[in-house]
Image (cartoon, rainbow over all chains, first blue to last red; front, side):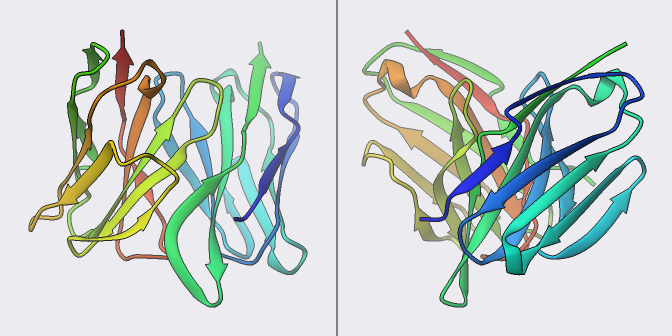
Length: 113
Length: 113
């Protein structure tokens, strides 16, 4: 099956700093999503971005599908950005997508005041 | 509009017992997927149901089963509970089978003692 690797595994920042999270995947995909998991376990949708670039406030994401990676940028980080960030992909199996998301191991982000 | 809802929020069961978890998708969504997340890992795909039929199954034993009802809500059943089944169980809904953005519920935290 498809492999998803996220880096770095852990990231510690001071409030106001910028950061870049990376997601590498091993095969072509029909869907790529970035999530933020809060301390209560809720997965919050950040971006649906199988290709291209999107921005939402202080967050932006870029997926280069041909090179099989995606980047999540967080600018001017705040303590509320702390938590686990997951990348998840839905593999393109011979042109068919089955809706199965394969998650990376996540990046644990800690933002100190 | 209401998001994905799951019940119960928390559950404590004894080894060997059976459990049923419930999920209601976003209105208009016809696909429901189930994921298991153990501590420190990303969610793992269990099942996908679309239009009341099983469309995908992850690498889980036959003790795990699910179904989708005519109103597109879904139940996940786990029989003969093991200690290793303790996890956060997440339900996701999407408009269609594959390639669509998935939205997650708050999860059911199952503890097996």
